[in-house]
Image (tube, rainbow over all chains, first blue to last red; front, top):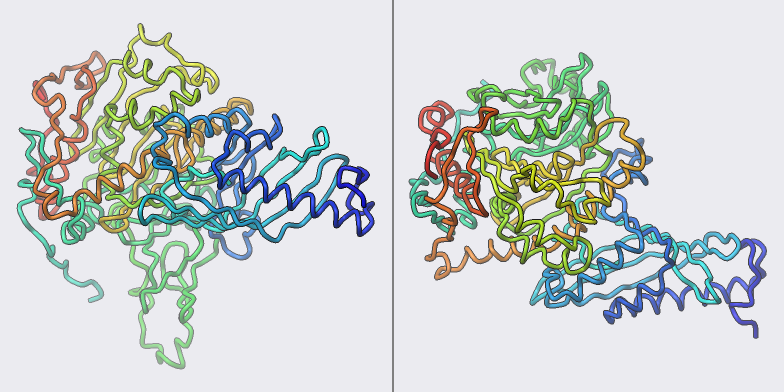
Length: 185
Length: 429
């Protein structure tokens, strides 16, 4: 039995079917463990799953006509909902422990459902992974938020461990129907 | 005759009785009463100059951007002559929307129901079955889209009013209304960055507006921004800052930190990181346009029923600023405000639950307290010829907004409002 860490670096096309399956398994397990860290509120641990050079970004989506779908999302360098580096994500996590992060006090209950995980590219020790998500938030007595969308992640193998070095989040809503975006995607 | 006579207001109580300016008290019912909300749509939003967009968002003929005036959806277009049009997004035949996209470029707007087609200037240019079904018995000239009564720009910021009796935009803005737009316009060579953030909060629109003048809440509401290390000297920077208030006719006001020369050295690491040296006061253009981040952002608060507000964020930069500065200011904008902003994310629930707190039969017997500083401050002339109070944290801006709100609500018409609104106060406030 081969270990996922033993899979040779290269491109996806270089992988034989068994190696592809092992990598798929490894990536899915990583994403599910990551989701569990968020839902269990192990946010400091979650930060350790991110590389120091992570780019965490959520563009703005617009309702546009069919002939202008190239303008559906804003691009890097335009306005966005998130445009964070590791330092900013540390602030987001640190604020939850301040006792004053009112949007998350009492803490919300979240559920990250990660599906349709697809390996879409590999370059050396980096793997591009797309997945769909449903992030559900239940808050206070009766408040609910549901965010659906796609995450385009770039994972990097660092000392044998997968880490996220890019997370680009594409929501399906245009006008966000939530009071805020105080959850982590 | 295509126009209905103006329908009289459903609820016409004495709105002045809801705001006790002298004691600084506001009746909670103005935040949750459905009849009052309907009257606001008529007497405030359909009457006021409403912010539509910046001209940079509709540069070329055919460019359009959707917005709202109260419950009326409107499309702002640049027509073939290069003029800006504000059109009701509602077909004259069955009322359906003629434009479904938020923004884009179009040659015309065809109603997806029966195909009535309108030009960029709102003229009805095409009607399927004109000959066969209508037997040419339809005067297209009379069935163009409804339009704003007046459309004017100030520094490239496009405003529209649905009331033909509204005064010219510059007269409406007055000195106080112009300040924020002048700061935002800088040398005039500006553009709105691609991407308007939009989200909904379950609060009354006035609760959101009220908050922009509120320099009492940051040290509590936004304490996490300081304690997380994002803005480590937030509290200190606020407590060191003197405050100023400017008050204008028709409800415009500015409130917040007064940056004196001796305070200019108090830049925090976060401010240094973003290259912005000071915070400054917040202007609101009545009813619902807040200018912030020293003119880098505009926040529009669109009413969506008494219990919901849609918040839109426009980000404005000078054309051709260095790429590095652009990136820093962009990240500043998304890190501070908007639904993901470290400061603003903690605001929404406060506004929503404050609104909810105006519903209860027993709760609403207790008026809200807006008297901080009332009677303690003095409006004085500045060398630049403005009137302002230099003071500490206060609630003059909020109270003025509600006093003006009541005047708008009691006025039967623009003529009535012009004749009977309060002048900007001088002397003690």
